[in-house]
Length: 305
Image 1 (cartoon, rainbow, N blue to C red):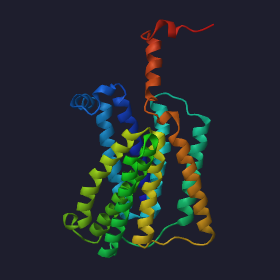
Image 2 (image 1 turned 180 degrees about the horizontal axis):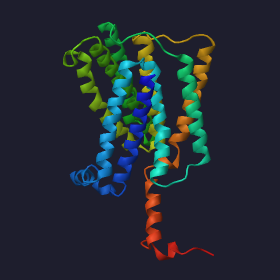
Image 3 (image 1 turned 90 degrees about the vertical axis):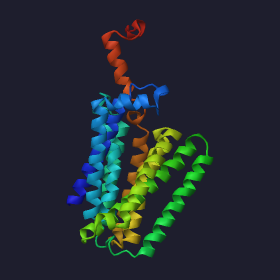
């Protein structure tokens, strides 16, 4: 139960970090992106700094959660990050939430509850996994990620963002699985700095963030977010069930889990298409404020008959 609570808190922190960083960077011009001037400007903004601290807090909560719980149980809860982001963006930027968005939130939440509740993973441990099993699982995951990256860079427009988004989700899922290995080793008395998974995380983590930036740059959020949001827990669940030997309920519960997964997928795709998650959504409120202060075009501020 504690692992579930920590993972939900991690999702809230990740969502808050995303909104805070978007709030801090909304006044940056496109010409200053990836420049030292933009970074220096952001560092001096409390919202951006607090967003980074919140993101680090979410990472720590995430790491503890998958260290004390079955990864197949808690990792799917990260899907809730998307509806949390939408709601926080609506509150922060004073924007309305469309009816379709509420329906998507409801579908994703219902599906998430059904999926986790139906499977109810138990048993298994990352500590008892043989080295050769780790090697095969990591190699298979990296091969899939590499293939998607190649397809992405050979693709055009939004197809590139789709492939890179799925690849990013895959490598984030691998990173989470390695963190679970670190937690299991430390829990059994192992030394953090003598555990090989620690160095795997140190290598994979920056690579995953680099790939995420490329996915976001390749296209809009609608194209890359669904693949990233869904593939991340999917890879982690696969590691939990296949590699860590976690067990789930069988029979009719599997049908409920499949139905839950379908609802999660449909809700995620709809949420990723929400106007609240678009890069320019935060500018709407700013424009409204400018008109209220008389800073905008006078003719635009004049009500029509």
